[in-house]
Image (cartoon, rainbow over all chains, first blue to last red; front, top):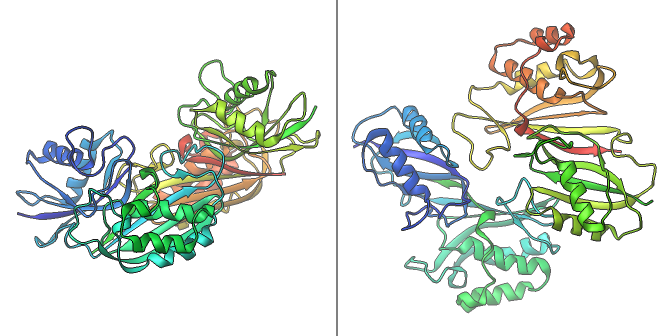
Length: 245
Length: 245
């Protein structure tokens, strides 16, 4: 059976996340249903990242098998047609070797977290970034963030429900930059634990306001206890930007 | 009476534009009503740009007089509170000399037009950019755009309903750049005619697809006839970015 790799973009607002749930609209189910409308096949697709409810994707990747060879451009256009008017789009589609698995073949995942640091409520960015009212020192956040880069036990930064066998992860990058009122946090790793990015961002916000010093972040990491880290930043500031293979 | 200058940001979706209309939600009326709720005064505010229905603003500027001195931060926070849940926000507020008029004191206006040039429907950018499916040659668009820079009679690029006395305008800048699928058109002038940016972008899109050559744009300009230019680009790709004083 031919294997297809697709790039996927979505606006996570109003959706229950990537994975099928008993209730609510998931990205996975929406695409599977659109595929069924296209070819009548009951297909299960697998993605590189099972994003949470409200989290966005600019460069999610998934794969699925079809019974017969189809023109990739036709698959993309037809699925997009059936996905309307949902804010989910297939941005690329190609036939790929049968060994390719979007989840297990991935060698790197890149996330962006957007904070708008201002008093005024958000308008065009509403639901697309975290409005943070108190002034944030992005340089202090960036400096402290470097403590988390490298191979660590991230137990303090994983959801209690996280199903990963090991809490060890190698964080390749955790960069904090600012342009005007917008603070962008970019992070990369081969893989992340459940809620890892949001809990790292939540802890960095404590650094940014001065409630935490660098040492507090170090202590949180070393505690290997979810209670020791800051609260999760809200999902709607988070974007899965790209996946490497 | 003390005069206040405010910076305003809004998401134009679902609104009838800046100016009060008989029907529908306008930015002007929404802010005037929020001001009334704050101070009980029936205030008329004037803005630098009377943006059309669906057009967004990141840096609109307006001014208004209040009967008494108020702390600008208090004015901003109170008006923002009363504006909720509308996608309109006061982003700055200051008391300013009584001569200041947001419309007539302006010496420069800066607009951005966003095109997403791809086949896939928009998700996070839906309503915030113009999806254009056919490939656009942004370099050809930029080169042709330079024909419009300078002082010209822009009759071909103004709405029939435009109320400006003269069709002469001096275009300071019209730049077309691309990052990935996104084409950004940035333009600056002391003032623009009604629909001028959208009709320039519409004509540039004809250059981008190859339907028009440079000479066709030159001919359209020289025709001094609205029928000679391309159609207006849709409003939801347009942003009033900043105003100079």
